[in-house]
Length: 150
Image (cartoon, rainbow, N blue to C red):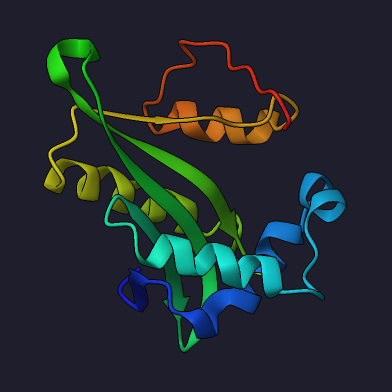
């Protein structure tokens, strides 16, 4: 996909990112694209944290994908640094085009550049299509995740 530009997100991308977050059955119930204030606050925090990389994929001036890559230094695995891929979203009309694979490959390559020893991600248990997608890319469903809402 030579016409794709993967770059750091800027504040002007925020409405497109939030719209993608809201454009699925899970996101529709938890995102509020009509009120960007909490997202603006979160964007400001992300922008000042060197271990957070919010990126967008842009095609012909239009934001068509996004993800967040977080860098976590740690002690386990002999002091390994890991990255976590979060909030992967692709515009509905771009799904199935290979864009998701390209975006994940960008995150894996960037993880190498950042010195990570491991790339991990979580996917909601109901997203079986996403699970197959990640497995096709070489990710292994090795753990069971837990969450506690606060």
